Image 1: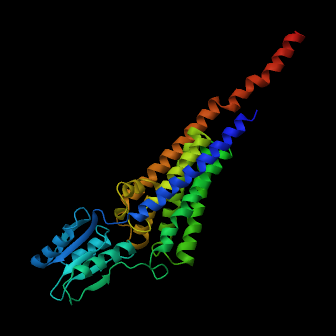
Image 2: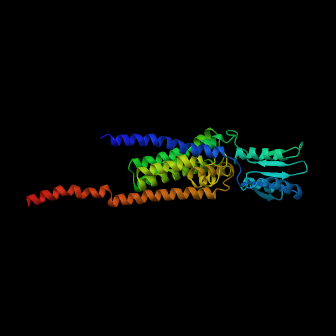
Length: 336
């Protein structure tokens, strides 16, 4: 009689260390291996000096993806369009470093330190922050910390819809309404109160809501297809991997491969990148993240709607009629 409880106790004892180990791997390993990997940077200026700067970047094989520009104006435009994270302009007075702390404070510091270390002794290195982070969040800490609450909100919405037994259009409307309200509330906190994002208020609210909708729809869709196990899979994808692989606190190109790419395919990473684009770069480079979030939302909602139709056609509600009508038919047979 005690065999089943003993097995469950052993399962719990083994499962908890496994989950903790997986969480430490997902969060600690990428953080401990931060380094540039094909990081897009620019070089501009006269040919001899610019070529020397480019060779300096290329000496670190696989670390930087160098883009050449004719002058400083072209390099600034590329930074504002999110083509590169920063650039170095070769000039008669020494190198001029152009950074964008709004894109990644970590990359801005890395680029500044790399150019300063490679400059000749005594050379003056000027630094200009082309797209600066807002005064309310100069190190980007608050923006990075916002990904986990969004993931938790989406996970909570998807789990609630699944556990409450909502199906079909009702479930889809619940997920959409919850995501919209979360987007409005999150924009009110991050933009209006804390001042950590500085773009169009409604566009930011839309991005935040779309991120929550993508996560919630994916979790609910997995729950509809797989049952309670789907919630576990959704938590693994969105909370454990999606949050830790998002690269929002540094940059996707600083994470070990293929972690950075995987993070951008998941809603938390795509949502963080899209929020940066909308908040600081007037929507530049927003196409890829929008497509990723839209696909997750569409697939999740489609799974919820399909599961709702199947439940209506052959689920418990449809199967209850024969059981209820059996006593009536039996009584009619006896009286007949």
